[in-house]
Amino acid sequence: TERPTRPPVGEGPWAVLGVEPGAPREVITRAFRLRALETHPDRGGDPEAYIAVRAAYERLRHRRG
Image (cartoon, rainbow, N blue to C red; front, top):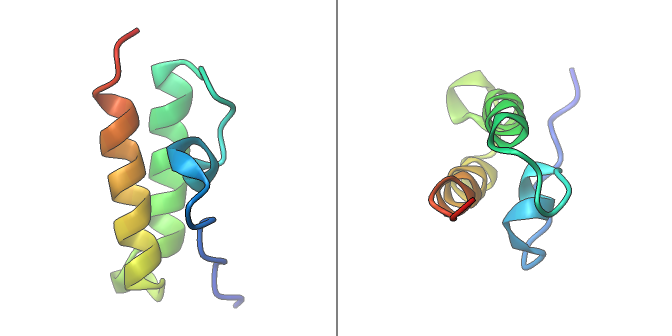
């Protein structure tokens, strides 16, 4: 199987999760879950990518709106 690509570095949390800026929380959560499965070290993913995905989700999860 192919190893998932790393999320874009320095592109902001939207790009890391692969969602459009201003996406609803449900879309953000769904994107996080998919990216977390792809990048999780226990599933053969890259630990640095997983950390970036978690950080992006935390940033967007706590935004207003």
